[in-house]
Length: 401
Image 1 (cartoon, one colour):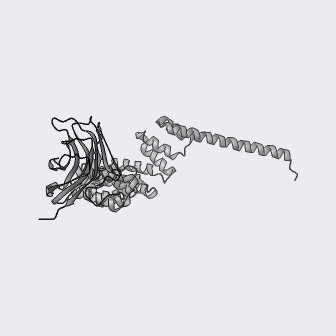
Image 2 (cartoon, helix red, strand yellow):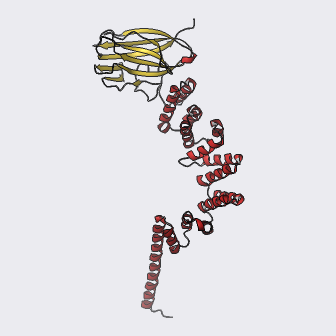
């Protein structure tokens, strides 16, 4: 049989053109359907369904806007896509609201069977919380924490309604995931339970990231200092040192020769930013320049120190330039809680290197103290103008008598 090639070629071109036109039409319908879907109104979603009847997600979204027909729409969505967890969750919640708890549970479990992400787990935890089934609640709360969302504050709030004991919540759901532990620490602080955040913070030192978590742990350490909780503050600080997240000295105070830039934590030096004086650490120690415009009463440098009960001696070496006697500059040891001064050095002035030793005692109520280099203008004297260089400062333990 002889084929007319010209006729065949024309026929093929027509068929290809028709197929291309159908493809263009299909693409147009899909684009138009997507546009209507993202408009997000009930009318636009209905129009999207008319263009693309198989758009199972359109039915879910429409069900959230059309309460009267929601159940039928959700069932249609599930029929079109049995792996559609959103429709199963929404339909399950509707059954629960209507009192059909068995069917609700079945649908929520169906959602988890096809979707192991956070939303089905969280939905089941909520369901069992509302049913008062606490063992099942803890099971699904933990499963939720095992696949955490970027923000699981709602999960912690729900657990808090079951138990106000942080140790119970932590034991039940706080898994070894830095994302969960970070949020748990922040949640406890928001509930004014900072002391309870110390234990998960110690876990975070082993599981987290120095870059992401060091400032959070510094802030918690400072909270413990302010709360006069020496054991908690010490445990965090020492763990940061052990895990090499920070460089610190075994001496008291830390950074006694001011050889490093201070860390942003109370267990290192906090240098004044007051007008009229400028301090910086360096190879010669802490250098402070006074312009004569500084406040009449100010702190030049300060560090929290943790001391067990006992007798101690504060030792420091320094020199000054252009600063007369009776300067009002001195070292102070003060209580952390009341700020009462336990001991203070002589006023510091001397053109050559000068040393002094100041004995003091700490008892069980004064374990957290502030070591402070302070200035207070003395009556009848002008403000200080000149330079102070503190070469070192140390606290030594004195033998028991």
